[in-house]
Length: 483
Ligand SMILES: Nc1ncnc2c1ncn2[C@@H]1O[C@H](COP(=O)(O)OP(=O)(O)OP(=O)(O)O)[C@@H](O)[C@H]1O
Ligand SMILES: [Mg+2]
Image (tube, rainbow, N blue to C red; front, top):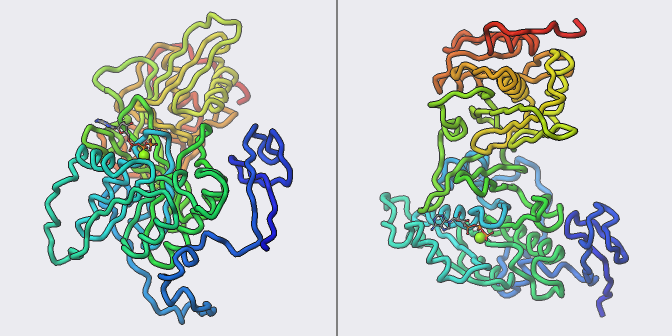
């Protein structure tokens, strides 16, 4: 008889412990340990074992080591997902046989995105959408809302696979899902979601660490062997990580996060891991009543309403992966009514604001310690890179002085603790984006000149120089300290 042993696995970090604790000894989260029964048998989750009668001949052959030259099968080319924004995040299109995990907050639009993707692809190739959380009728209702039902067939009959179609499978048992995947052999399959499916051979509940891990590894083996591209939806925990152990992210090829502000219509798709492309790329979508629409020029979305200038506004050029995005920052400083002043940020790192306020106070003598300070990025885009520092500093000073920064000026640069303006990466790309959007002047750190870009470049080495350049005119300008 197979030997049985129990371990306790943390839902948050995947750490294992031989005994139960109220608090995970590894990541210190409370009540996250789950009992898992381990049997000393071969992994039950292998798709080949699940479908013993149907496995392909190749899967039974033991594999021999080969040199790179001996691998003669040409790798299949990437193909487009139908969304240029999704292709960009995947590193240039879908890699056949890859497994992509798509995470995101509840209701953000994961199912909508993937249903739209398969509907764009199904006129060319065979698609399978496994709706483990919704009934077939509910998915059809969504498809009708998205205008997918009754779509005309592909305009190019030459390239159309005669079996191309979109199949729905409302099923939660992984064994049955794997059988259907092998029988139907779709080019792309969506599993919505990994927390809803289960392996009947395991005793733990669907969505538990053990189930999620085993189901994902079974699907991974299947994707590689059968060359089926799988998109798996994963729910996120309240901390924002994909529910289930971190090990889930290690198992898959690509991890995408779909995020957005509940109150704004735009959605950002980010890659946080990609075996076939760069990470930190973003794709921008807008949720409208007929589903998700691509936003090919996101700067327009994050620039805010520029018809009316107000004090405390500065424009920066952030870089998300290989994409520059022009973002408007707003700052408000006002006398505090508390014993210690309030500082608040939206879309900007809180600690960086504190650091910039300290630099402005200490190096430029601007008395901010009795003032509340609020800084926000328009459109809710989160800018975490240091290139936004100079924009934050100038927006704060502009609000303090009640002055308006020229709306056609952008600010790019990192602020050092000594009050210096430091250079940042990808300057050429940022300046090109600003010039393309009609900005006339850029205040940037000392360094390279870009004569071919149609924008006036003002080089500065200290924040005080940037203040003079961005807010010209007469006002008290104290001598910087320590020079
Ligand atoms: N009629 C509609 N008009 C506009 N937007 C809609 C409409 N119906 C749904 N939506 C949008 O679609 C979102 C739901 O999308 P979807 O079901 O794809 O999200 P999800 O991430 O899959 O959610 P879950 O985590 O529950 O599976 C809603 O939050 C809403 O923003
Ligand atoms: Mg969903």
